[in-house]
Structures are given as C-alpha cells and as structure tokens.
Length: 187
Image 1: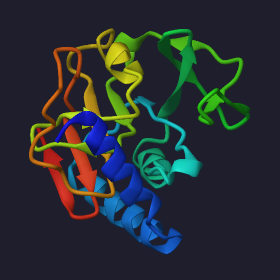
Image 2: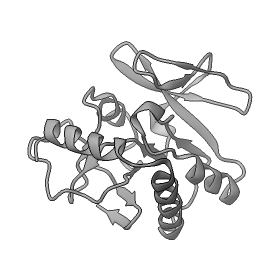
Image 3: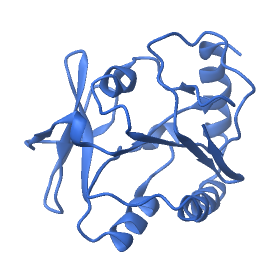
Image 4: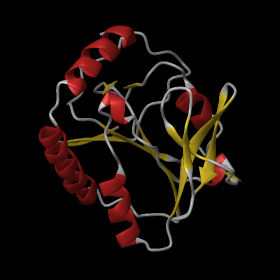
C-alpha cells in the first residue's frame, strides 16, 4: 500500500473509533508496553496527541514510565521552521496549539537529540518491517537522523501492521517496536 493510501485508510478507521473503543485499546496498549521490558531511562521524548484526529494518547504509558522511574523527564517536539526540536517540560509547563492543532510546550529548553535514548512516535499506519506512515511532513524522520543511532523508537497503533508500505525511501527511519491492542511488533 502506498503512503497516501495508508494515510487515507487508517485516518478514516481511526476517526470511526468510539471513545470507549479507543479507551479500551489504550488500556491494552499499556499492558503490552509493560510486557516488553524496556528499561525506562531518565529521558523520554513523547508527543501530544491530536485529539481532533482521534490520535493515540501516550499518557497511560507515560504514567507507567513515571512509576517505574520517578526520575524520568519528558520532552515534547516543537516545530521550528522546517525542523523539529525536543523541549523539556515540567508539571508547570504551559502548552500552546501550533499550526496543525498539536499542543507544544512554550518557553522551554531544548535537549540535544543525541542524549535521548527512547522516543514515543505518533503514526497513522505501519508495516511488517517497521516502516511508519505519519502525516507526511517528515519532521520525525529528520529529527531521528540527528539522534543517537541506538535510540529506541516506539510507535503506538490502534491497528495491526499492513504487509508493506510500497513507497518508503532512504529518509524513512523504521520503528524499533510498534505496540497495538493485539500485541508487540519488534523490528
């Protein structure tokens, strides 16, 4: 399946989910995340879900990470021009909506991408090789190219993988794991 078709198909499927279906799926994703045994580091880059697009919300997984490692600090993406940077947040941080309706922290310090060992990544679809389809702007792939090559990349999806995404290119960086309500896919 081509990226554009995957975006269309999986966006539609996601928008058809009821709130209770989505809540149940997020609970199951948390259970599967707990099963993979990732050592919770002191720094994790996460994301703010786009609520209008019925996107997966990583807050349950983040709460589990805080429980397993109370010293964990979360960083959120902020778009600056054509690039994305990782910015620190605290309990007192305020967020503002960007051009695409994504909540970003305001007035926070940037983190060196090479110091981030674990990143949670939003997606619309993924394939059996770990290829990921986002919204098509390429911010995550550009950001990942600046990160430590050992960074663990975890995607979360309400749906299982498609066999293959036909038009991935050399700039598309595959996931390490993708977690769905049905299980963990490791790449």
